[in-house]
Length: 118
Image 1 (cartoon, rainbow, N blue to C red):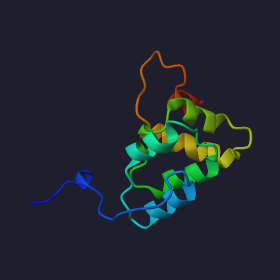
Image 2: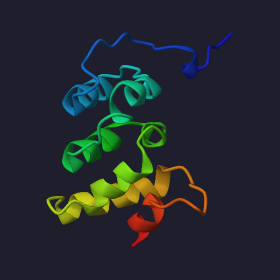
Image 3: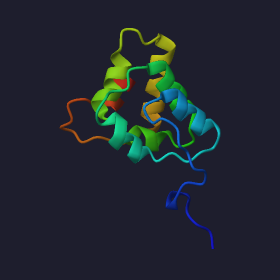
Image 4: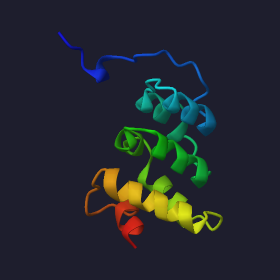
């Protein structure tokens, strides 16, 4: 019988969840990262501030939607609005968000999908 991929990590990863570079490296090496754990330990407390590295993380992952589900919508909108985000990175993030971000309710203040479309 086949076990679903979500039943547990296929490779153990002991990297630093606060480091986008470590997360990128883990994804590129095929490690299974517990994105809910990254959210609990890091992203729920501190916003992601490096749009370039975050775009690399999303582009390197086959499960960008799972990552985006763990990032607060206000943080995604902030990454798209950063004045130091290069236009090419903003476009890349926008495309990934449009393709993979979960739909948010109508009453949401920060709507990353709407901002990405704009």
